[in-house]
Length: 200
Image (cartoon, rainbow, N blue to C red):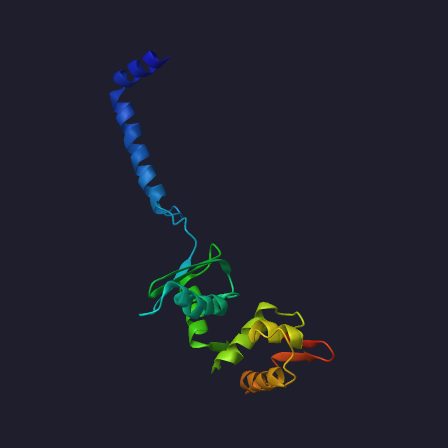
């Protein structure tokens, strides 16, 4: 069988060369319209935050730099995996997003977390650290009622009730900033239960 094929190719040189040239032309034209890259990117979109901390030991970098950054970015939309590494004087936090995520948008969201800015109905709002942490916790549990005790534990790291209105005070300030220029309340109070962020 193979011998016959070789014999035919040698006997019909012109036809074989014409078919080869046709295949080359068709291959080039098809290659221009292929929706995939020749060398596709298999790694998911990633944003890395590197922070220098001169003079701090590895343990201090972990507790004072890396851990707060992880807490701040945890829960960002599209987050798939969160990795971190702390060494002498340097912190590195890698945020892997779901495949198909826009890397530019992902970087912008991480930047907003770093600057503690949010956007509501086209208006950018700058929050204080505790206000931002409170909003982030409500956003992570959107459409779920968060009790006062849960907020004290997750935002203030209290395992006891300080018997103050610290939660109500910060929620009031956060509400006033979010609701400025809007008739709709961003945070809903569920009487006898807690608080819930409205999905918008």
